[in-house]
Length: 208
Length: 347
Image 1 (cartoon, helix red, strand yellow):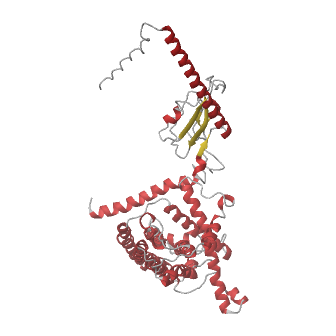
Image 2 (image 1 turned 30 degrees about the horizontal axis):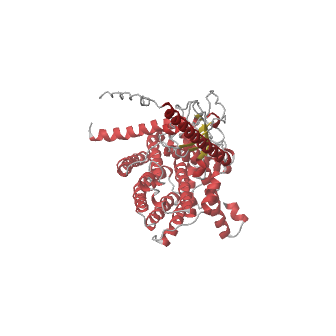
């Protein structure tokens, strides 16, 4: 194209493209807006959206699998063993609970909403809910404590466990002494029973 | 005009009263156009803009103004204090002075001087002094860039604007905007964009050139008020806010007010020169002094709307493209139109 041709072509091309652009924006002026008035109107969130974590502490057996699965270590669990004389009840899946849960903290500020803690849970007690509005002025308020034991209950449980352990060790000592006495009395000609059977060979890792 | 002078005998009082009317108009109109701009911008982007302050957020511009009034007036430590303080007012005075010659109605014009159109071109360039002053006094490289760009842009686009005004003046035969409007009175066919009330054969020949002139005048006037796509002086993505980066509070509001007032001025000039000003498009139907105000403001407002619409459609030009448009496209075409219209009128 000659120089003059390019000049005129450019003018008409730019005019044409301006009108194309304006023709696109005008219909948008007249259509309904794509946004909603957020706090008063909320958009429906997907059915399986992963938002704030919730723990149904009554179902938790304290297995610590969620804390181990967490990639950012935002779940902290402490457990205390229960003594046989205490019945902690059953979970909704009929699993017997054997551990007290003095501490079950989730630091939701660290949480990355991956949902990896949800799948290992044997009792399905840790779930992701659809709550997404939980901003706080203080970061400390974002540490959610699900443990529902009072300090007295915790110290009581600890004491009982300690007492039970002491009893057990005492019983063991008595039993050991009795066993020793019995073996002496038998004056066995044969040496004491062979020690534990040899350990099985560790499985050979396939070299890859 | 005359009846106000007969009611209040004191000449000074009448002068003050006549100058206050446009000022009130500017303030009310600035609030309306602020609201329009935000709403149009939002709806073009499929949003809804403010909805909470009053019905569909109609009170928001007032809230914005009150907020700006309360804000701290910050002056940078190394700024040129005197120029920094003066600049917004000079920019606004330039804009406001132009309102003196706008014919709002057949009976209302601030100052019915014979050099109305010339006066407009002259005081229109006063705005650039304010902007350049603001850019220089801020002692900030982005501000200075904005100011210098603004000066370059204004100087370039004054020429197409002035040429377009000359073409309209050649047809109407007067520089007085009130006379120009009276010349076009009597229906849509008498508007200068369609050749004015000339004999039909001359009119037909002149019409293509007046339409081109009208279009170029409109483009050049957008450039003169520093609106997108010609908003290089305050290009947000390059210069923060350009010349008004360092301004805050009421001084910033003055620049804002100046920009919106200017928006109306250029639209009003286009309307007065090419689209019959206050004259009704239906001849004697719906014409009269009060209808005159309605027609003038309504026509100007359509152009304000188009400027907003363009702003939210087109991207910004580069500096070299800006100069190219002015010097290689608009100016030569207008010279050609000037020559053609002159020849047709002589023959």
